[in-house]
Length: 174
Image 1 (cartoon, one colour):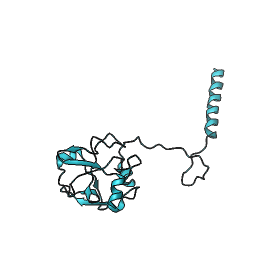
Image 2 (spheres, rainbow, N blue to C red):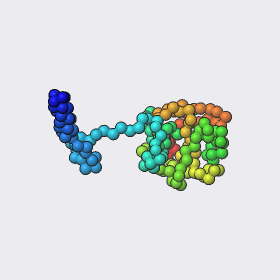
Image 3 (cartoon, rainbow, N blue to C red):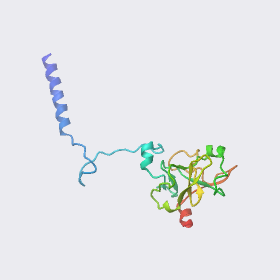
Image 4 (spheres, helix red, strand yellow):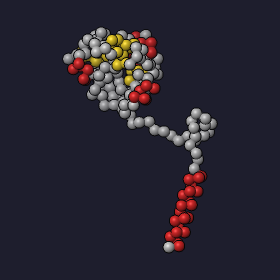
């Protein structure tokens, strides 16, 4: 019994000593340039933001993927429907396949890419606000499989022809 007790005490003392020798976590706001800061990982790609994250993140931004295109806060590609300036060509059935980008406030939030001047909103029939780019309502494509997916570009369906809003397109619009 004595050997077991001495061994257990030695093990506990070794663990306690190792714990005391670990570097304390640094506050990233006060740490110096050479300080080690534990890396934090972002949620997996395609994970929708929590409501708190969505409040802090831009509503519409320029993607980091090629071709550069407009994306929402979750990184989902954004599309316009040709000839749908007033939003009337996309009905309730359409919105199941092409969910509209909606805003809580009258002015949508713009992220990276300098798209703020072209972003606005228009009233929806249900009383909400539809986010527009250069006067055209923006939509996501339900069949896109996550961040970086652009399967909706060039789709022709009963509502018309859908286009990804690319960086080249808005550069020509400005």
